[in-house]
Length: 617
Image 1 (cartoon, one colour):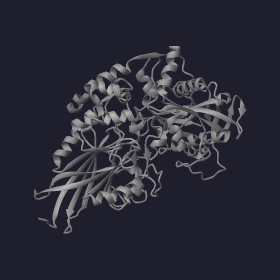
Image 2 (cartoon, rainbow, N blue to C red):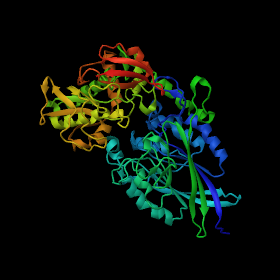
Image 3 (spheres, rainbow, N blue to C red):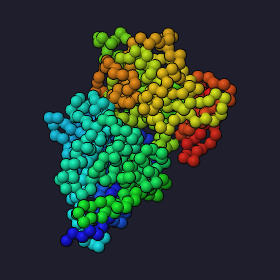
Image 4 (cartoon, rainbow, N blue to C red):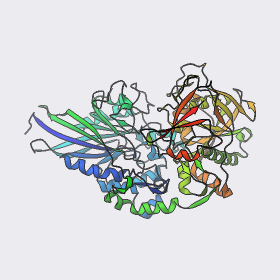
């Protein structure tokens, strides 16, 4: 019998951006690690479920890529040899109710994705991804849940789940996808599907949105679209991700239509529980059914429960996850320990944002050498060949241990994974001198503007990802921090007269705007927002060779390498008394006497565990 005062409580548990973090083990360093990803979240999931009568466990995407285990199991034959993908095995064991896809699910191509999902015991929805001529995942589903209200009466609650992902997937993984999927704008897809979901009887619609919180203005190519998505009528709550941030959290204070105090966007409950299993999102919804029979959200609370730290071995890995992935863990250890060569000098990323860096240059040199081989006999072979590479592990929100640190001596596969994290493929583009200048200007947006003569200013813009700091080897140039960035982070050009990258030369000659070059780079960079201001660049080389494999062959060819550290860039000199604060990993202490470094002064640790240095400019 319908009663207008029916009330029930529904709990939504969310994981996001797990990136193949399963156990408390760092495969890049080949040692146990404090943070254990899903193995650390599992006890929190069990506890949170026990507290609530009605509960769903949902994942928000980017679960299949991110560690050497993910790379190893990118081969469908390897999955078949163990019977099931380790992440899917763990998610099945923990009883996930549904999931959506993130952009990194496509890094290895569709055969890997299809093989991994074949064994999923939970549905996967993808509302703005279609595969013309092939099997597509359902855009949405209605999940019936037998829920008890506050008096103990059962009800069948029909929960609509729609999955949404960044439309840039087809650009970022163009080489791997080769036109096999089509992307629709996040909000366009939601507006198309929501009315049908309601018509099919959804009592509540939850957006599993692998997208971040950003611009309030909608457009079809918007990557972080949670704000306009929340404005769409019919969506009741949004589970966000992709940005590797926490919501509620201070990062999003002051954004239009975003309330960090109530954890709402456009007044609707929303959450984003970090990355790598750092947090479990817990959203509690109080649903009330009116006289018309419709369930509506009354009150809500959102909490992010922090995963316990396994430091000093005081917190064991969850046995459910351990059992599910033990064979995959052993196979991964065998794989990463395979020798590939030797290095005569250490390779690390502690100073890559303030000085020429051997690790970045090694990647760039491997890209350049392979591109030169492949361009032989082609029209672009006669153009000057440059190579662009960027650092990946440089601390930031991932913490003070998130740095590459490969000692001199033997090199194994894990070291190569440490130096190049992602399964990007080798590409090359043709650019003019003017476009090359703007490419460098975009990369130099990493830095804040520095006032000449002032001490201890902030050096790094925390909103600019370090993986967009391309260093273009084969050039010489300076970065003048007294000037503002030429481009805003979104690629807009506030003042066309501004330049902070100066004195760009190639082979000792200043480049001219109409000069032509080929630049070896990676598949992600060509489709990234960093390149948008440069316009459409002619593709000189399009391969499916992964950069890490290119690097492996480059090292194996010589056996013992001497890492390059050629002069490429430096900061322009500023008046005496000008300094900036630079935070790096504490492991940098072993390399502070390097002759290639600018003047540095050690100040001590930060509250977050970084080592703070004063950089004299």
